Amino acid sequence: MTTTTRVPTGRRPLGGRRALMALLAGAGVAFTALPAQAHTSTSATAVAAQAPVPSSKPTPTSSTYGTWDPHVRPVVQEVAERFGVSTVLTRPGHSPTQSRAADFMVYSDRAKGDAVARYVIDNAARFRVEYVIWKQRIYLVSSGSWRGMEDRGSPTANHMDHPHVAFRPA
Image (cartoon, rainbow, N blue to C red; front, side):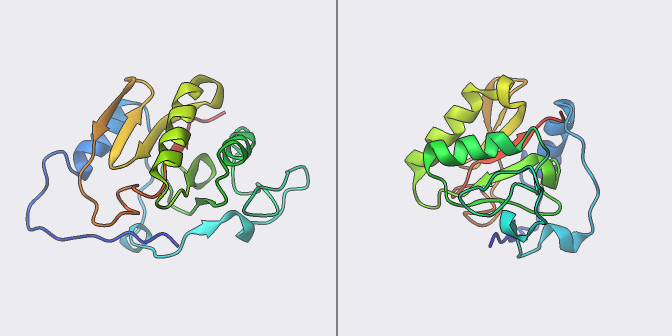
């Protein structure tokens, strides 16, 4: 389960959520407004919870790749198998969309997370990667560099236990 916790501080952090949204919007990322409860959901949908797609192959975590867009499915499979990632998640409200985002859960194995992030970035053109979030930093493929992010209040929300990969549309 992924839990997002909001920590009220009484002030807006420099480079906070609005700055991130502006940065991503400038890179061409589209956003969908969601009700507030969607941002604080404590449930993450594992691949196994999705309806099967007849032509899809099994992942290490499920029986199908039904959650992701067709161009994302083989990337999820390749990365999960290459690095032994046994849990890959997405959820409603995921950025950029549920079907174009994947969380490669590495938990406390930071070396594995580093390797996943590096591999995805090195293959960004082939994989159609838009951005990667890992260890409270975001890598925008369009800029070719990492930038720090504000504290979101928990290790999972700060992407300390999983690289988040966002894909461009097909």
